[in-house]
Image (cartoon, rainbow, N blue to C red; front, side):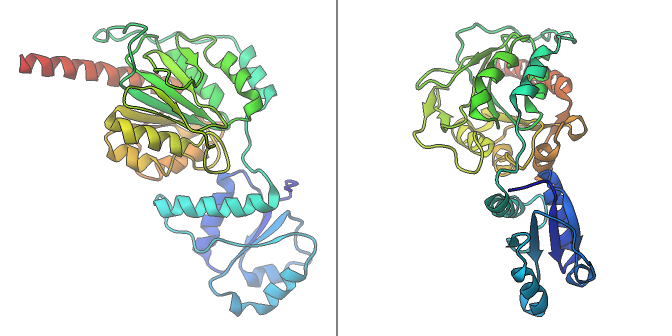
Length: 346
């Protein structure tokens, strides 16, 4: 289990040390030491740590180091997942996930999640900002209108506050629905439900088999059960749980919905640890959907938006209110383009 003492990183390649340092920082793991085998050999004593991570080009070149590390009882020894690919590529995202699967096998859960205290603090905050006005060329939709444009909101640590600010800024009855995938302990889902839309004009709905998701609604994706939306925006529940260490899987949500809805599926990745969403972002972008992120300097934890940014698929970033304003402009532009197209075809 992690005690917060950090990780010792021994790597003989300077680029690999840099990428390992970045990956550990992105997941909030402190580094007790990072350097090459020669520098580590000069330490007396070695710093206290929870684990020693070794990534060597050729382990046979350092038999004495390996023998000494294997003989230690103070901390586990972990050999890395191989050389890190170039950041931004899908191979890098998978490499990073292999690395953290190995680390979690030794140290337990690494991703920090919202707790009851942080959600209670969010609930206690007063509403402080005015809602953005409905654009002139955008007509409010009826409450029973099935959603044709779907926006996946993905978040982890720091996400509830950011997503709430985003929703609070939006007027209701827009011609879209949201699918909210938040990494959170299942025990706190009900608390999140009470807090999220308290001050907004949006309606939060739970996942029910064959229920049609309608405009003006937010589907809260369950933590423990996978789902997708069919071509009529009806919720389809899977018996199996989400793949990966945490639920819901933002990558899976984005992939499943984009596979059916193509360019009518979009995503906004908010504050969070890790890189969930980075695998699915390129495919969603290629299908014609928007990929947006919360601007990292406004995030409680910027790792998740930064990982998606590194894929080169992000076409807008902003704080929660800027994201809301941009969404209204996009919807207004779509309405104007649709009206112009109808005039030309008449």
